[in-house]
Length: 246
Image (cartoon, rainbow, N blue to C red; front, side, top):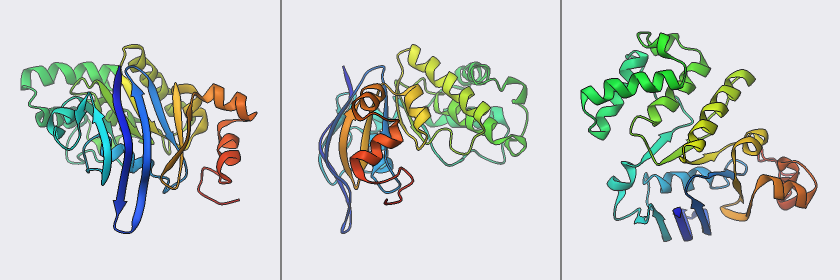
């Protein structure tokens, strides 16, 4: 079953074509990664998938629904973990979850129970009464993950979910994401960490200049091109994933 299906997807910002006539499908229960340098179009694709902006042309459906015609229905079934920390700095860890639940019309009684379950899941129960200003970067990332799960999403979108974290915190987030995969949650992520893509992704789309160059599993790509994922990308595009032209 396809959770996301795109055909001829295109997005223009004035004269800039950020996404250029791409096709892809994302299957239920898989982790699908978008890889590429800054400006490749990865984040724009993610924004279109979670109905933050409409495409300029082409067709894209999420859960079989058109993103332009059914954004509210789609959003109710999606969780989004942004790259930037947008937690409410005036609230405690627990309050950040409870307040966010209101956006999904989750009752107070249900949200209280969900918040405790999610804090246990991300190992932050003891931090529940603490203001988020006191949290480490890794803890804030885990809280963002917990918040993105408050509506029990069928599809979870993660934009650079472990950027800036120390190795221990990164592995902790990977463990949580693999646990979600085991429960058949579909994951879509962008990342510049190739070890992250290798560990988490069933398939990856390598992008550059708004186009998809190839879609395949990390293991097949590394076998085919005789190198790690960053070397694969360099061989295909002549660019490092940092965006520097070689």
